[in-house]
Each structure stands twice: as structure tokens, then as C-alpha cells.
Length: 129
Image (tube, rainbow, N blue to C red; front, side, top):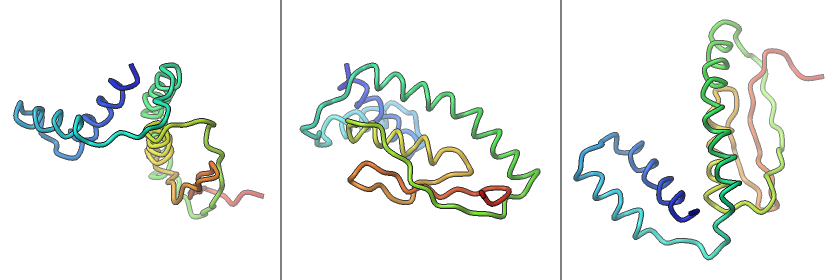
């Protein structure tokens, strides 16, 4: 099942990059997604995939909320924080985690440390004490 989710993730990225839903592009995207090398890592559990995809869907209203906050109340302060990555994440799930953090307008992942940390840049209305 995780193999299908990985294929779906690759196709989604392909369609976002090409912005073309034609049959020719679909065939090309499926071909590329199948031919791309796969890691020899654990594919992850279906529970992890579904939970992370649910978080991505829930981030959409959060992103709109943050965008309006930035427009109405300018954010002049910045902070760089370290956030712990969830344990035993596959590369595909790490990508989705980074996408989730970066999707919202107030945060962006600057660096992923192999020790399991994300370096996150945030903008804030007021400096944290």
C-alpha cells in the first residue's frame, strides 16, 4: 500500500510542476514515477501515511489564516527554531513533513539535520520572551 502512496506522491509532485493534466502528461508522469529509483528503506506504515496526509489537508485552512494575519498585522520579528522530526520516518514522509511546515506562510524549513531535527525559520508579530 505504501508503494501506491509513494507513486501517488510522485505523480502529485509531477502534476504540480507541470500544471498539465493531459493524457500525454499523465502517461509521461506515470513512466517517470515508476522509473525513479526507490530507497531500500522501510516504506512506512499506512497509519503514518494517512496521519501525515491528514495533517497536510488540515494545514490548508491554517495557511489561509496565517496569510490573512500577515496582511492585516505585519510580522516584523524572526526566529529560528529547531523542531524534532518524528522518529523512524521514510524519505517520502520526511518530504511531506517538510512540505507541511513550509506550506504555511509563517514558516519555512531551512535545513534538515540527519540527527532528526528541522531548522525552521518563523516570522512573528512580537519577539518571544
